[in-house]
Length: 334
Image (cartoon, rainbow, N blue to C red; front, side, top):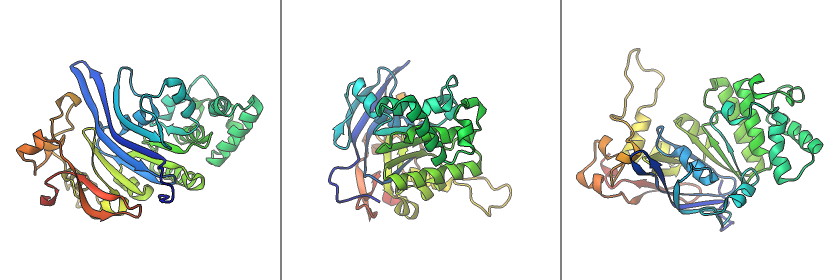
């Protein structure tokens, strides 16, 4: 729930634009992303692969590819992150903002036992000694409910299961009690039972600590259960955003409607083909000057391909007071 008594939001992103070098020239990867998050609020980013979700997270963390060009504003508790020197960003990462990466087996260091990897941010940011940091690592592993945590302090990542490695990643992210937690597809490659356990754990820890959570996924069901507000991304832009109940009840953008229509549903007759969105996500260099979804949209007109869509209000507001917004001049026709 957003804290409206605090005029300064935890996170304020305004007109964030990222341009990346490619073999064909410079490509606009993020095109005017804006979002606001209060402390204790959970926000979800959803969309197809390649729409800019993970790149948005990397931009927030200051971990963009080399030579990336960034403009716009990212304010964390009112402190500007765009253009911040790397030494200052290093002081924030792990301490005030942290990230749970998509694949723990590649994010964890295979050469170090897990306690050392959990202890690293504690020693770096809180200047703990080795013994104190190791004891704190055990407390964190207990908190994320890793079975036989004490026995596994000296284990290496390859000795743990996927769900156990993900719990270690969560421990690392939570080590210094950050204000902002970014979870990028945190249940990828986990079986359904472990997925539910990991998501329930993240939700519990966010509620206990009052941090802000930015959850990235392509799973609509997960968003419905886990976040207060959903932002739908396509072609590097946010095409629709609303409080979760409003978005699930009143979908406005043609792309959002397409995503929902493509969901598998219980009770369908055997052999029934799922609804699909025709075409595919365009390459960054092939994005039109106007709406990135225009070539796949059944409602598109010529103006859609040439004129960037403006943000319009659908007229519904969530509990936070933020409006239901859509970037499509023809949404009323859908």
